[in-house]
Structure formats: C-alpha cells, structure tokens
Length: 322
Image 1 (cartoon, rainbow, N blue to C red):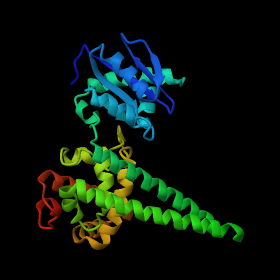
Image 2: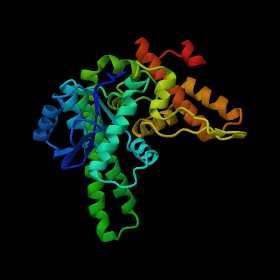
Image 3: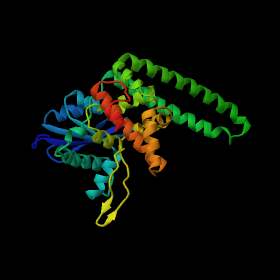
C-alpha cells in the first residue's frame, strides 16, 4: 500500500496535451504531449512525494508519458476508460472537461492507492523488445481492420471500383504476411523460452503469443482466478435478495479475449484436452457459447500454470485433467 502522506496524481491524456491534477498541494496545470511536456511533469512531481500516478488507456496516446514517468521511478497505473467513467458517475461528476477528468483521476488514484490489491493496478515498465513487439501487434490489428473493411466493400461495389479494391486487398495481405513473419522472428529471437513453452500447445500461434506478451505482462505471477478476472473471463454473480441473476463475464482486456477466442475455436477441434472439456460441457447441457468461454478460461489458466512452472504442454498434468 502507498504511503499515506504521499500525493496521488491524475493525468488526462489527449493527442496534443496532458492535464495534470492532484487533490492537494499541486495546482492543476497543462503541458504538451511530447518530451518537453514529460520533462515538465517530472520536474514538478519530483518536488513532492508521489504515491501513484493514474491515467486512462487512450489507444496508445498514454504510452510515452507512462513510460517516461516509470523510468523516473514513479508508480503508474493505466486503467480502462470504462472504469474511469463508472467512478466519475459514482462521484457525481456530470460535466466533462480535460481539467475535470484529471481531477477525477486524481481522486480515483487515492482510492486505488488505499486498495489492498494496489499492486495489480500498477503498470510494468516494458522493455525495448516488448515495446517493439507491441508496435507490431498494434499494426497487425490495424491491417486486419482495414482488410475486413475492404473485403466488405468488394462485392457491393461498382465493377469500376472492384479492381482498385482488389489491389488494396492484395497489398494489405502482403503486408500482413510480412508483419506476421516479423513477429515470429522477433518472438523466437527475444522470447525463445516462452515461445517454446507456449508454442507446443495446439491452437497457439505467434499472434496469440505476441498478444499475451504485450497485453498480459503478469502471466505466471497471478493465480488462476486473478488472471481470469484480469482478462475478463471470470464469471461474476448478479444476485440481490431472493433474486439469483445470471453469472456473466464483463470488462477485462478485450484484445486478449479476442486472441484467445480464435485460439480456443481451433483448440476445441484439434487439442484433445480442450476438445474433451468442451464436449463434456455441451453434453451436460451448457450452451455452446458458454462452453467456449469456459474453454477460453481453462486454456488461459493452463497457459498461466505452464509459464509459472516453466513447463511445456503435457496432457497428463493434473492442472489439465481437472
């Protein structure tokens, strides 16, 4: 838990600027979202005892300032925008400006700083190899989005446009192949041990490994319940009084869930352990979607255990047969 007399700081991030606020001592101020702005923030924060700096995930716009602050020894937490919005509503924040958002984040930082599980909110400082891999993962995701959009335009388009669209599709496919190859080489070079452990699991490819490496720096250090909740695969009760609601999953890291979904679809067909688990759930009356989510959670906890024990896939392991 952070020091009780230390300050908590909120940083609202936009493309061009950063708004900084603390609920005490530090007067709100704004700087540019660049190296000069980062230096100004660091110079101000170093004059105080800082417990925690909190900011929202903003599509990568927060990455540079977060890394700069971490490199200077500050604890930085990057939260999901939905968490910030929910907190703001609960505290009665109706208006929305950059300065108000920064003040709200500072208030939320104080709550997180007193949280008994404070450590799980703190962002790990990525190394250069992981940052490079993350850039490739993000670019791959962008290419897939553009490729999907062009494919959707192809058939309803006028014949005059189809040649142009087909050309763009071909170029995007070539670039996607290049990115995939670069990811494979990067992973095998810089994350060889982890790649060998995870690569032995049927259904796990370079794209899934890359997503886990960049989006889940915690695997191997969390319990199965913690990592399931982190990714958004842990079912939560929605009960009140005599009403027993449906158990549902929500929140968490959507990019990881997306990667695990495709991996699990393959695993239910080609991985004997996951296939048996899936079939058993369906035969017991579970809906196929519910069974698939359960398999995603199962596969995630297995991968987490493999990393923790530094052991390759083995169908005879007790954590696979449960």
